[in-house]
Image (tube, rainbow, N blue to C red; front, side, top):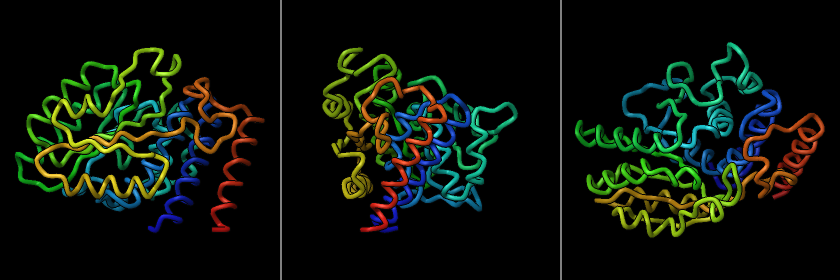
Length: 278
């Protein structure tokens, strides 16, 4: 996909996020929207995955460590063809396979179930070590929240990743600066994030995580980095492209009502129309 196609697809992913949360009357739209561009680039450009064969042995692995942003993950998988886009409206419904956190046993394309914050990166490190031990060349990607990295387990896993020189591992931090209780700087600041990962022997790249040129360059640099895992610290805008959600902590875990849903979809339609004029 070229940059414009990726931007259009990310906009469709955002529509799916808002639609799923509205249908469920619950969920986490803010951090899903901030990470939509990263999700889109990973699954439509970067990763070796095949919707027709979700468990193929040589596929790249993805672990959603900040599991509550499952609406973004699900919308991306649906638009990539792993399951019907229409199923997004079953989010969190009784009997649906699309529950509040990803379930590897029931959702095509999900490599690791996730829930408790901090655990996903540990699973990703394990997968990357496994690939090294077995001589496989698949790569492992994991997405963390910037509030999530207040968890100690994140740094235990990072210590091991650096020690084992896991150059097949890419850790992405969605740095939108907001967590459930407010700005991360006020709750428990993890800054400087880049210096912390560097201290654990990571190659670190700082980018605008809502800019596809910077995203593409970062993943290319990660592939070319040998002897170290890579951490991409992606500055993003929570609630991106939905006017009343942008940079508003209240939308960390709140679903839009009918009126808000209409406004959000109108906002995203305008974004789509602007992209069609480019």
